[in-house]
Length: 602
Image (spheres, helix red, strand yellow):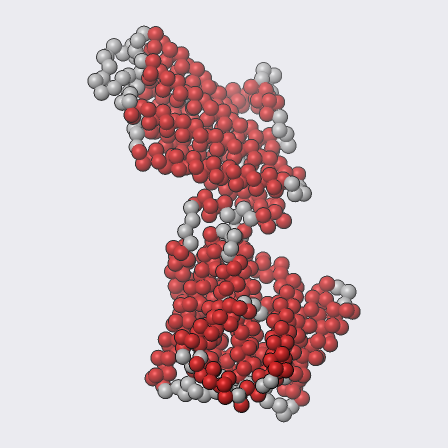
């Protein structure tokens, strides 16, 4: 083998890699939309995922491309992490199709049909048909098919060139000595990893190994660990693609790596164990067909062994890549989804509903803390407030970007509604923290409400929890009937706040409450009234968007005005009903008890 053979080899390698890229790009373009839809829908269980991954990868002939595609779906929130495990396993099986195609070079002659299947004969035929379709075809579909055939032809030309360049290596003693080093399983494994990591394609590296087999210097004991290493090295592409992606996309890359590493260990243990028992001839030469068989066996065995452990692979990936809940949830806001606004809005609604639930629980907990303090609950409320702030920031930024796209009128209204309500949910979280601070003051100073004040707050808390519950449920379910119930109950909360404030002033004047306790009571009333106001904002926004109007004052004037319209009649009935339900307790008479030794009453 002289320097011209070396040049030919690397030229053939360049053609091989370029042909694979051209063919894969053509196939993905031809079936890209179908592939994405299929990947999204047909991953309900691991077995389906394996079949799907194998089929897709057999088409585009790149397990790395399939894995990166799946990572993109995970990153955009279209697929969950558990759906990816089976697809990744199947992709490893599907990538073996390339090795089988390249093994056509070993088909013996003897008939015209088999002669035409040989790469040296098949490549020019495919190239001619491909360029004909590409240049003459007017439809995009025919041009894509032409590109696919051209890519495959270039790939075969490269393979034939590489095989021809290395065919004389069998007579080179130095090369033979180097190859014998790879009979060591560890060195063979590392060689496979490094080769594939450099060219970032297990199909290409297996093709190179098949080309080298023409020299007759590739033995069984050498091929097996190299192929195992090639599958590990193929993970480099997905690991690089994971840079800048969300946590679940990174975990998908880790699942790919763990599957390949564990699969390599299991297969090598089984192979060398069987070799010791059955006395395999490790020095036996292997052909391109034999390499294709080993490659297929490796991936099939790895899949069969690890398929029952898909859940454990997912857990292992989660242990490796940890992340907070907010980051995980907001990671579904991928800007690539903005191409389809309805999908992007669907993800935004999910996060807004998550915000609504957090705000509701946080406020209920903070109200309860004013009566029975818990440091654990206090920490949870503060953490929830941090989450709500992050939700509003990320969701608001995403919605603003989305609004700059061309949106249908209904989508535009939905964006406006979400931008309004997420601010209200975040502010409700702020009021929950204000209530927390009040509760901490009560606890730290050992303050205690009077019996009258406790009864009054119980009534007010019931009304506030219900009005927030109505607002949240109305928003999450897009229920306008529930939304219409918010405003009359909000008015009852306002009425309660004024009445309780007057009663509190009476207690102050009679010396039944201290000034310090009075400030605490007043803070609670103010925060409750403002929470109800935000609930009103949410409900009114929903109703007005549904009516294709954003005039809040017009709506409030209609339902509370004196024009006798039906909305006002419904409002009046609901208002009276809630007013009766949350009638504040009648005073039992002024309390004349002395202040408790452990605290003050108000």
